[in-house]
Length: 484
Image (tube, rainbow, N blue to C red; front, side, top):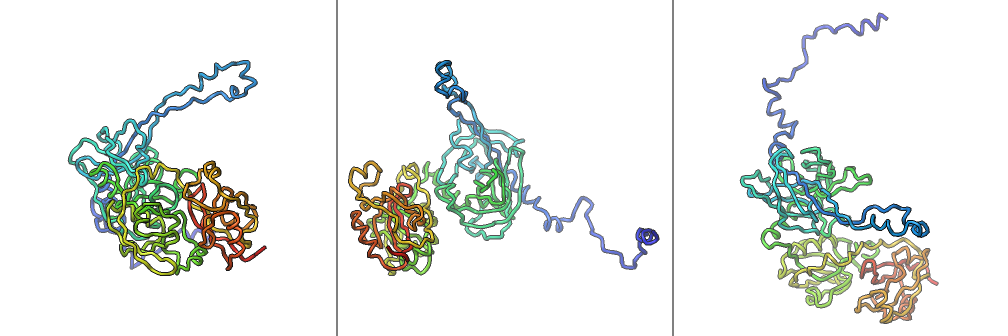
């Protein structure tokens, strides 16, 4: 007990008391605040962030009593229950955020916030200020960007910076109206740049951040530590529907390009090359094409009469540079071409049969229906099987079968009529209904030639060029270390 009592006694006075922080009369000193608080940045940015409320009419069938789906019971109740299945119209509201881009009322937001809306309202001051009816000037679903306009003057437009200069580790702030709780600011860093391949948008070049983004944040601003706009918040990756540390924003450079096109031309006109780039390059494919690395874009098909066709592009060309700028992958090549105006003259470097060539192409205009066609999903990566084409059955592809399977008229080859699910070809992604067009760069005119070329193939892997109803024309490598 004596020890406990001694421990509670006050310590003796020291001749060297600890230093004390000095505060100004009205709060923390400005120097200390500048090092510990983003309050000045938020005060600068917040007036430029708006709340967006859109209303749309949804037409559909009302929920039907499941009992009435039983044909036996409907004999007794008749079809009176059909009344419940008549189309009904109902109103639905969408919540989002936006960023004031110009003092005269132009606002950037995410397209999915206003898509299909009958009425759009914009609220200033974090939902507590003036409310305006907004007009949708234009929208671009491929990038998920929309431009709105409200009738107002002298609005607090945000400052924009160059998003291409962002680096991983830069501090960022996300500003918006999540869950309609009111203006909210979250902080994080740039986790990655030039992210894509998620199937969220047709053109993906996202800034990835761990600053919390939730429903209602879409269309709001992602700003740097100085309060300059670097992106438009658009999506999250989540297994729960809530934020889990992976959020995405459209870089402001891309959003600004789209906005300029919409405000000047009324729509976005994109350059068109006319090549298909349906798959990522794997080490196995790189070996088959004798490529030094996988940095570039593999051409799987060239559209007839396209700018690429006229410039001399061939299937199997590997694009490495566009106008002396390195191409990292197929996604970047699509984006580079799409951000050039139709009619632009472009120098493209390709590797063909291990030799570098420069192709001069004049870009065309992207067809209007390009994004309304059936979307193709990325192909499966080749597997690590140990058989060649064992377990694959092929038949001739006649005109009747082509019509039945909607195979394009210019596709010639051997139709895959069956694939053993345990075979190496199945693991590589070959499926029933696919058409083998080439084997090791040799044309396959019919089923017998496919068998002959398969038997004659040498090396550890077979390279197939395949047309698939799922993903179109692409390449597949199949391990060839086991023979019949």
